[in-house]
Image (cartoon, rainbow, N blue to C red; front, top):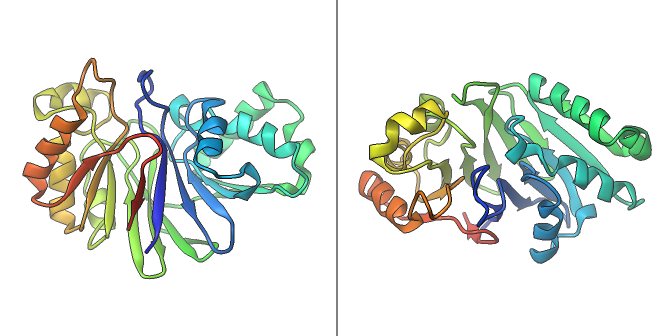
Length: 257
């Protein structure tokens, strides 16, 4: 049984939650992160979850929006002070270039601080990467700019993380038979037009993707604040479309798959 810890589950303007970041254990005591939240809050979430920063050896980034990469520079700064720390950053080409530019602008000298302890790996949709006993396969999403989701296979278990996306067959095809699907849910079905305009999906569409893929379990993520949505109502709507178990993620939830 594998697990994922939700360090942040909110959309970019949700002040009630941290922004998107998930942690998964790898072989030994190493960890991988998917996305990096929106700032120094990432470091606090790691501490609260009991994850030492130096254990984070792989960072996979879905795209370059600030609520997914904003914690990148603070993480790098914290690792620079830990001699045993090293990090390999995985992202698609445009995202990788933007990250290196961002680091140069906001934390000049950081790459030289870490030297060979900081590495960069370009992701290609459909091409798997082996990290610490896990096979991570990126796939393209529909978010209006370069954006990828991730299929993670570990010890016979499979979890799929969709990041931000409009409904797309890529999610269904990559989530076929998965134990867990984590899917963006902007709002209810009656907000579909607005969700699509912003590059997102509704709870119903997340449920429909889970049903079409035949996954075992669905978790909704990247949630707007309670001013706009009720997470439990979104979960109920997604469950009606899926026909299987659904939950709306909360910060620091741990889900097994």
